[in-house]
Length: 436
Ligand code: ASP
Ligand code: MG
Image (cartoon, rainbow, N blue to C red; front, side, top):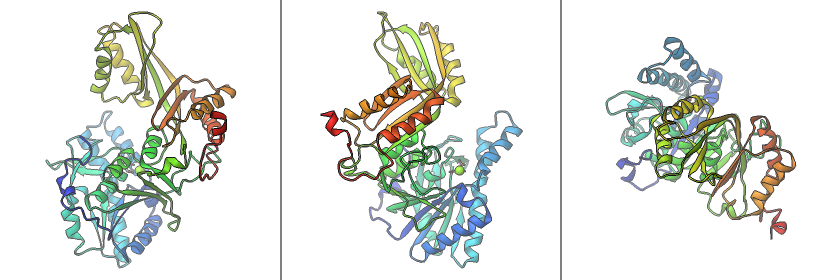
């Protein structure tokens, strides 16, 4: 089931609530009391013109600190109790922010997920939102101008506190925007917006003024530290325009994320993403019969392990096949254990793994059907002696797995080769003449 899909409340009124601003401030934006005061000033400014829902994360690294405490208390902390603990981080932020807002004369109220009615599935540590009680929010606006809501947390219909998964406050903000039918949601963070690549690692990375939600989803999944993918998915589903902007430069417009209409006409590629925490796993010489891939993937699904770049292709020996895929670093031990356990059942010869993997991906809405793009990509890596271990492509991306040591160099080379640091208008394809 998709997030929020069963929410009938969302369908009851198609009028967009243009007079409600939904904003979200991340952990770095509320790291100290001084920063909370700065955030309160921004919210006060907004509240002069519109009602405002402000979602906040836990202060700085509070969630990491709470996780560390939990690990000290128990080697495998009970998930229900973990959610109880982790949700307290956001509660600190909403209370402090509201105190400051009230001192500034703003009519504000802090609300936990339980108080709002942000209902989730009965799953701990990565629950999905099922329904939001927008009537409570709209009723509170009769008395208040600003509602400060704790991000990242939810509640089950049985009254248990849940959390949405790390980085989940973005999802809370978009879900609230969808629930009150606000057309936009501003995500305030500590960078100016979304770049063509990580500006801390690729010196020529350029800020994008607009990017499509599809591209952002790919970038996030492929390792770019942008937005919580579930937040982007929800925004796309409920047609909420997202704007990523800098808390410390509130006048800066940031990056607009929308459906990306007409975008591929003027820009084939939007960015290069790197994910250095990848491993590949290969199951060698399994019988080439129906049902094997199902058994392998089912065993991993039962452990909740996500696979990516799943491939099976031509095998030199008749009657057998091999399957290869990637998993994230944190899942590799469990993956090998699970596959070893079913190896004899599926008659596989062996399970191989390679921990030295990084994904380097080109992402772009207009990448499809342009043969010069893969040619330039592979030629660039080849000329520079970078070996490609795996390749996969889809509508909006081409991913290469390379050694971790080469990943940043590969990204920089591609960023230069595709001239992503340069503002483009009109036809982006500098290689069109060569490709025809
Ligand atoms: N505080 C949570 C985390 O650090 C949620 C968030 O910041 O969005 O993951
Ligand atoms: Mg955080």
